[in-house]
Image (tube, rainbow, N blue to C red):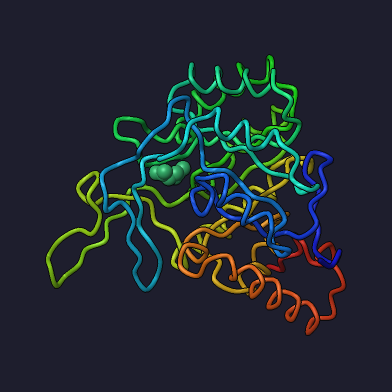
Length: 311
Ligand code: SIN
């Protein structure tokens, strides 16, 4: 692994900048171990965990099409204890990020108290943005509730904590959310989760393609790249520099990894394309990124991170 690609979040060093997007190849300890074993993966993010084991929504709950994917997985996961146990083990010096879902304020706070009381010293990511649990809105679209939850959490949480955000589509919302986030000692944001509640229609069968929620689900993959980049950029311009950014969304090649970093991402995570191609994808992404850097004469990502030019 070359140190041309590195990042630091909450004083934790990452050798490399690539990760899985939570939800892909991270539900079991074996999958997480496979990610960490890749020399091209800087960190593994666990599947967002809930207090109880969840089987998730009825299948089919994931569908790929040319421009991307649609999913309504419904947070299938092996339960919080399973992931806390895994991240608390030693992983040969590679950081592991523990993703915790917030199905209710009470549950989220209970789980984060257990992280605080545990031996785990790494980064926790609080998922405020799952669009797929029936009856549970995406918390981070409710600014008042987000502020309230973070206020409660930071009364007791002293370890590194970031949040996984949904995409925003309006400058007023970038401003409002950044104002809230800047009030807290967050390690990072992870931006973006899927674009919630899209609908893919198969014209031949005249039907939707996933079973839950009558076909509505979160959109990912190539088609969400401009939205992902806009969110990374908008938040990089608004957040305190100490709040780092994991850019997620729309990565299929080294070119999109480069674009995420140019917009201000510190780490870049990959969902749909990882699901499509498997772990071998990371070697290709790193190779392509380094080729672009070589062509442009950049020795390190620090030379272009956040340096997007505008007209
Ligand atoms: C899911 O399990 O439904 C996806 C997780 C997420 O979007 O946060």
